[in-house]
Image 1: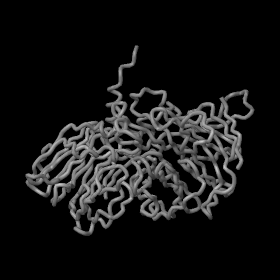
Image 2: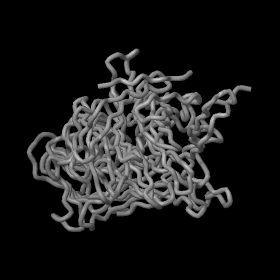
Image 3: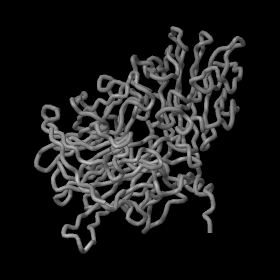
Image 4: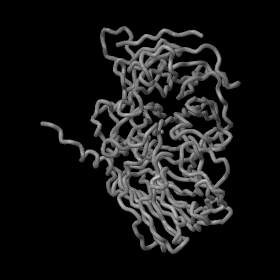
Length: 579
């Protein structure tokens, strides 16, 4: 094994994901300065990796403990994205049965070469990473079984296909000689694609411009004869940053870009509407222009990122150094060249492709398979949903497991993609015993969820709302003289209303303005890398059961007057600038 010396100089009905925070018709800008709104994929879409194949763009995100895993999105204009599949769609591909909240599938890299699509990714099980590759000839799937790579330490693997035919793996690891806790380093090794194994020496490339404070998310690019190593560092909170280094040889030495970091919001106020930006991937358009897909947080009141990290789009230009005293003037990417920040709005990449409004999601369960937008928490040990046992409805079978760490329980849900929304469903359920319940949940992870369910009390059928995992923490309850009920949750930033109806016309409040900060990563212990989901849930709380609920339909829609309201709300609450 050789160690290279480093020279360091001083991303059913789903319409328009790209407009998850986009404008409606009334506030759409007019030509010739048309813009799009960020984020381009809203609601739990972290660690974007992006590619262009001809006139098509594809993007993959982390999915952590959710399954199917690694959502794959498609676009032809970079601002309107549609979910087309998942790279991990079979339970045999990945072990998620007992992973922690925010464990599991981290930071995929999506690449295309010679007619094949590749996703390389880390699965964190019991704190240990397993790095593997899946492949497909169609990004919609099916994807192959997992090719697990041996002797591949660390996380955030990436692939680079060089123009000489060689293939290279990059990832991070915690070196044996760290200068401080959390210092990480990027390493590189050749990959034998035919045998799916690493070969040759490991080369240690760079610890970043911030001394390697959680150096991660590496990607390699080649431009004009130079290799560029892009990485993120500083952690995924307010101090997140993107930096780049350059080398003539792929194995180094890599030289620091003196203008690093090339993207960060660490210098901005904690109250800035967009923060924690980083973990990006670059894509070149057919006409030679470049863009970056990066993650970022939208924090309500400067603290509460209930939607998780999302995918933002930002323009990139390349500039050559202008120092006359330099014999070799190097070119580096400049992200958001006008302001150096991810803005709410940037000019449209393509003038003839406006951003569409997100019209929501609905499912009447008449399709042969569950829609792509639905996810489970962890890989199901057995199927607990059926579209055929009662055609025209989703039959949700209760499980003994309840919302708890390292459990796979009877839950299926979709991402909350907006700060203001309504989600509603109609279901029929008869509890056979007091331990059985079924209904609607709003969940951040195993450590925090609001559960509104039908159950049984001594007096009969009861509708209750509680905060899980403490299911004895009942916030509201109401006797219901029916087994069929409509359930609704309405979100308004950090306030959630839980409502019910017996006829679908007249709604009554079970609880109003329930505290949404309890769904915030800032308020939940442990690691919290995901975002809020809204979904269907059933449990018998440890007792054997064959009970089930029949769900007739599920609808989700945004309710904000404009997709940009969140940004102006955050600006309005910032302290006045001193004169």
